[in-house]
Length: 327
Ligand SMILES: NC(=O)c1ccc[n+]([C@@H]2O[C@H](COP(=O)([O-])OP(=O)(O)OC[C@H]3O[C@@H](n4cnc5c(N)ncnc54)[C@H](OP(=O)(O)O)[C@@H]3O)[C@@H](O)[C@H]2O)c1
Image: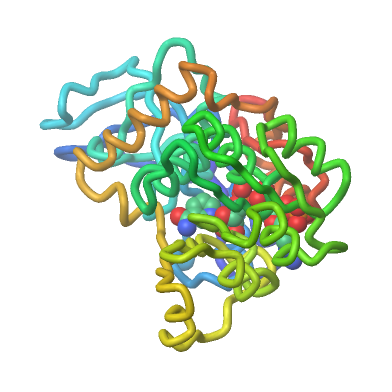
């Protein structure tokens, strides 16, 4: 019988415990999937600690994985046993050897993209696509600010935005990360823990400011990001790595007619057409080499707690993937 990580309480990495779970048989519109690689994301940490109360307990966490279809119910849009698929989901259940998945979420994996690579990049790549092509459309000649530019999503934003012809200003927490951000194409890099990033952005843009600021850091950078914007510039706050952002009066946006966005990927991929548009553009960016999956730290599913400790402690230089078969 297959194993899954079942959370019965919120807490530290130790609450991620393995348990035998029978996934059952797929009903209409459903697939049974044997999972081969499971992505580990900051979202999973927020769910584990209870910061997000979006997983009902007891429950199986995890929002992205790759695998092989082993059984298909009726009306599954052509999916059949043997198909290689990947998915992202807001309904959890990814930390499992086998699961039932709505076929509406399944994405056919390109032959050239391995399972581990897919599970390490799909959610982050689709997030970058949402940010650069849907929340704001980055055009050649625009200037873009990317906070935590050496992070998972940050690296992909640097690569893709420069490919689209933008000038990218990245902020990072260390010299080592500055090298990573530059290698990903950032034209200017600011060490935002030791430099005044607002003053530096104004200097780099000759006082004009940036067309869009992508801010996943939240509390520590939010108001500064607003001060970096050009007239009509957009502030896109898509994460809160340093903590939640304080309330903001709309009048604060009036100084330069700025706009504020707080997007969530799952809202941009509701419905098959929207999902395929975002996933298709992401797979294409990978196929063209615009986005490159970094080598992932692979751990057995049973070591999910260790994976979370590595993520929180920033011990892994790249993505982390749980591999059920590795146990
Ligand atoms: N809205 C969405 O739909 C969506 C989708 C995917 C991800 N996200 C969010 O995007 C953010 C980035 O995700 P990721 O997986 O790519 O993570 P990541 O960027 O690899 O890691 C977060 C980075 O944030 C920076 N940071 C600044 N203050 C921090 C603090 N107090 N604690 C920890 N890190 C801090 C660190 O970089 P430096 O050392 O360079 O400062 C760290 O490397 C996360 O907040 C995630 O929740 C949102």
